Image (tube, rainbow, N blue to C red):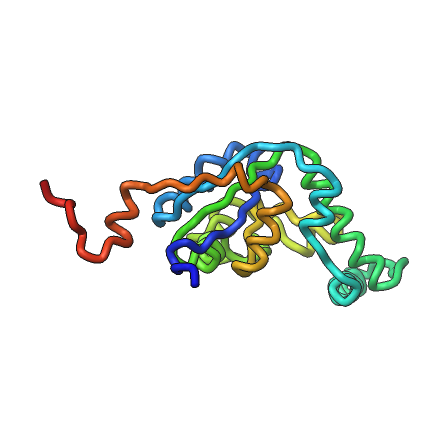
Length: 200
Protein backbone atom coordinates (compact mmCIF):
# COMPACT_ATOMS: atom_id res chain seq x y z
CA UNK A 1 0.00 0.00 0.00
CA UNK A 2 1.26 3.48 -0.94
CA UNK A 3 1.96 5.90 1.91
CA UNK A 4 -0.58 8.79 2.03
CA UNK A 5 2.26 11.31 1.68
CA UNK A 6 2.83 9.94 -1.85
CA UNK A 7 -0.71 10.68 -3.04
CA UNK A 8 -0.85 12.74 -6.23
CA UNK A 9 -3.35 15.16 -7.73
CA UNK A 10 -3.59 16.48 -11.29
CA UNK A 11 -4.22 20.18 -12.00
CA UNK A 12 -4.80 22.31 -15.09
CA UNK A 13 -4.42 26.07 -14.94
CA UNK A 14 -6.95 26.95 -17.62
CA UNK A 15 -6.65 29.63 -20.33
CA UNK A 16 -8.16 32.34 -18.11
CA UNK A 17 -5.57 31.66 -15.41
CA UNK A 18 -2.76 31.83 -17.97
CA UNK A 19 -4.06 34.90 -19.78
CA UNK A 20 -4.70 36.83 -16.56
CA UNK A 21 -1.14 36.22 -15.35
CA UNK A 22 -2.19 34.12 -12.34
CA UNK A 23 0.11 31.11 -12.83
CA UNK A 24 2.52 32.13 -10.06
CA UNK A 25 -0.27 33.02 -7.63
CA UNK A 26 -2.00 29.68 -8.19
CA UNK A 27 1.15 27.53 -8.04
CA UNK A 28 2.27 29.43 -4.93
CA UNK A 29 -0.89 28.49 -3.07
CA UNK A 30 -0.14 24.81 -3.58
CA UNK A 31 3.51 25.20 -2.66
CA UNK A 32 2.70 27.04 0.57
CA UNK A 33 0.70 24.07 1.87
CA UNK A 34 3.72 21.79 1.48
CA UNK A 35 2.57 19.99 -1.67
CA UNK A 36 5.47 19.04 -3.94
CA UNK A 37 5.31 19.67 -7.68
CA UNK A 38 6.46 16.51 -9.48
CA UNK A 39 5.50 17.56 -13.00
CA UNK A 40 4.62 20.86 -14.68
CA UNK A 41 4.58 22.19 -18.24
CA UNK A 42 2.84 24.74 -20.44
CA UNK A 43 1.20 23.22 -23.50
CA UNK A 44 -1.39 23.80 -26.19
CA UNK A 45 -4.12 21.28 -25.38
CA UNK A 46 -5.59 19.30 -28.27
CA UNK A 47 -9.28 18.60 -28.80
CA UNK A 48 -8.64 14.87 -28.42
CA UNK A 49 -6.90 15.37 -25.08
CA UNK A 50 -9.81 17.47 -23.82
CA UNK A 51 -12.53 15.02 -24.86
CA UNK A 52 -10.56 12.13 -23.33
CA UNK A 53 -9.94 14.17 -20.19
CA UNK A 54 -13.60 15.06 -19.57
CA UNK A 55 -14.70 11.46 -20.20
CA UNK A 56 -18.47 11.99 -19.79
CA UNK A 57 -21.28 9.52 -20.52
CA UNK A 58 -24.87 9.98 -21.68
CA UNK A 59 -26.24 10.04 -18.11
CA UNK A 60 -23.97 13.02 -17.34
CA UNK A 61 -24.95 14.79 -20.58
CA UNK A 62 -28.66 14.35 -19.79
CA UNK A 63 -28.29 15.51 -16.18
CA UNK A 64 -26.39 18.67 -17.13
CA UNK A 65 -28.65 19.30 -20.11
CA UNK A 66 -31.73 19.20 -17.87
CA UNK A 67 -30.13 21.87 -15.70
CA UNK A 68 -29.50 24.00 -18.78
CA UNK A 69 -33.14 23.63 -19.79
CA UNK A 70 -34.23 24.75 -16.29
CA UNK A 71 -32.00 27.82 -16.54
CA UNK A 72 -33.29 28.68 -20.00
CA UNK A 73 -36.88 28.28 -18.82
CA UNK A 74 -36.27 30.63 -15.85
CA UNK A 75 -34.80 33.21 -18.20
CA UNK A 76 -37.62 32.92 -20.77
CA UNK A 77 -35.27 31.57 -23.43
CA UNK A 78 -36.42 29.05 -26.05
CA UNK A 79 -35.74 25.35 -25.61
CA UNK A 80 -34.27 24.32 -28.94
CA UNK A 81 -32.58 20.99 -28.15
CA UNK A 82 -32.93 17.80 -26.21
CA UNK A 83 -31.30 17.65 -22.77
CA UNK A 84 -28.55 15.32 -24.02
CA UNK A 85 -27.59 17.79 -26.76
CA UNK A 86 -27.38 20.67 -24.29
CA UNK A 87 -25.20 18.42 -22.11
CA UNK A 88 -22.84 17.61 -24.99
CA UNK A 89 -22.69 21.30 -25.79
CA UNK A 90 -21.18 21.91 -22.33
CA UNK A 91 -18.17 19.75 -23.19
CA UNK A 92 -17.98 21.23 -26.70
CA UNK A 93 -17.78 24.70 -25.13
CA UNK A 94 -15.13 23.50 -22.68
CA UNK A 95 -13.04 22.10 -25.52
CA UNK A 96 -13.24 25.43 -27.39
CA UNK A 97 -12.19 27.24 -24.21
CA UNK A 98 -9.40 24.85 -23.25
CA UNK A 99 -7.82 25.01 -26.71
CA UNK A 100 -8.07 28.83 -27.04
CA UNK A 101 -4.79 29.50 -25.24
CA UNK A 102 -1.91 27.60 -23.68
CA UNK A 103 -2.65 25.88 -20.37
CA UNK A 104 -0.37 24.79 -17.55
CA UNK A 105 -0.71 21.14 -16.50
CA UNK A 106 0.84 19.94 -13.28
CA UNK A 107 1.00 17.07 -10.83
CA UNK A 108 1.47 17.66 -7.12
CA UNK A 109 2.29 15.14 -4.41
CA UNK A 110 1.71 15.07 -0.67
CA UNK A 111 -0.49 13.87 2.17
CA UNK A 112 -4.11 13.70 0.95
CA UNK A 113 -3.10 15.71 -2.11
CA UNK A 114 -6.47 15.39 -3.83
CA UNK A 115 -8.44 16.70 -0.84
CA UNK A 116 -5.93 19.45 -0.11
CA UNK A 117 -6.00 20.68 -3.72
CA UNK A 118 -9.81 20.52 -3.83
CA UNK A 119 -10.02 22.59 -0.64
CA UNK A 120 -7.62 25.22 -2.02
CA UNK A 121 -9.35 25.41 -5.41
CA UNK A 122 -12.91 25.84 -4.09
CA UNK A 123 -16.30 25.09 -5.65
CA UNK A 124 -16.59 24.94 -9.43
CA UNK A 125 -18.76 28.07 -9.66
CA UNK A 126 -16.64 31.11 -8.79
CA UNK A 127 -19.48 33.29 -7.49
CA UNK A 128 -20.41 30.69 -4.88
CA UNK A 129 -16.88 29.43 -4.11
CA UNK A 130 -15.67 30.16 -0.58
CA UNK A 131 -13.57 33.22 0.15
CA UNK A 132 -9.96 32.10 0.65
CA UNK A 133 -10.10 29.61 -2.24
CA UNK A 134 -8.49 30.16 -5.63
CA UNK A 135 -11.82 30.44 -7.42
CA UNK A 136 -13.49 32.41 -4.64
CA UNK A 137 -10.70 34.99 -4.47
CA UNK A 138 -9.50 35.36 -8.04
CA UNK A 139 -12.51 35.26 -10.37
CA UNK A 140 -16.25 35.98 -10.55
CA UNK A 141 -17.87 33.96 -13.34
CA UNK A 142 -21.12 32.00 -12.83
CA UNK A 143 -22.97 29.11 -14.46
CA UNK A 144 -25.91 31.40 -15.17
CA UNK A 145 -24.01 33.98 -17.21
CA UNK A 146 -21.90 31.33 -18.93
CA UNK A 147 -25.08 29.47 -19.89
CA UNK A 148 -26.78 32.62 -21.16
CA UNK A 149 -23.72 33.50 -23.22
CA UNK A 150 -23.31 29.94 -24.55
CA UNK A 151 -19.77 29.42 -23.30
CA UNK A 152 -17.80 27.46 -20.73
CA UNK A 153 -17.60 28.83 -17.21
CA UNK A 154 -14.21 30.49 -16.67
CA UNK A 155 -13.11 29.20 -13.28
CA UNK A 156 -9.31 29.30 -13.67
CA UNK A 157 -8.43 25.74 -12.77
CA UNK A 158 -9.28 22.05 -12.96
CA UNK A 159 -8.38 19.55 -10.27
CA UNK A 160 -8.96 15.81 -9.91
CA UNK A 161 -11.80 14.59 -7.70
CA UNK A 162 -10.13 11.36 -6.53
CA UNK A 163 -6.71 9.69 -6.55
CA UNK A 164 -7.97 7.27 -9.21
CA UNK A 165 -9.16 10.14 -11.41
CA UNK A 166 -5.82 11.91 -10.88
CA UNK A 167 -3.99 8.84 -12.14
CA UNK A 168 -6.24 8.56 -15.21
CA UNK A 169 -5.97 12.27 -16.03
CA UNK A 170 -2.22 12.44 -15.48
CA UNK A 171 -1.71 9.71 -18.10
CA UNK A 172 -3.55 11.85 -20.68
CA UNK A 173 -1.29 14.87 -20.23
CA UNK A 174 2.08 13.46 -19.10
CA UNK A 175 4.44 10.68 -20.10
CA UNK A 176 5.63 8.75 -17.04
CA UNK A 177 9.18 9.99 -17.74
CA UNK A 178 8.04 13.60 -17.22
CA UNK A 179 7.15 13.01 -13.57
CA UNK A 180 10.16 13.46 -11.31
CA UNK A 181 10.80 11.63 -8.05
CA UNK A 182 12.90 13.76 -5.70
CA UNK A 183 13.03 14.94 -2.11
CA UNK A 184 12.24 18.46 -0.92
CA UNK A 185 14.03 19.69 2.16
CA UNK A 186 10.64 20.77 3.55
CA UNK A 187 9.45 17.16 3.48
CA UNK A 188 11.65 16.44 6.49
CA UNK A 189 9.70 18.96 8.56
CA UNK A 190 6.37 17.73 7.24
CA UNK A 191 6.91 13.97 7.43
CA UNK A 192 10.05 12.86 9.32
CA UNK A 193 9.05 10.97 12.44
CA UNK A 194 11.99 11.88 14.71
CA UNK A 195 13.21 15.07 12.98
CA UNK A 196 16.70 13.61 13.03
CA UNK A 197 19.36 16.02 11.85
CA UNK A 198 17.28 19.20 12.06
CA UNK A 199 19.66 20.66 14.62
CA UNK A 200 23.35 20.90 13.75
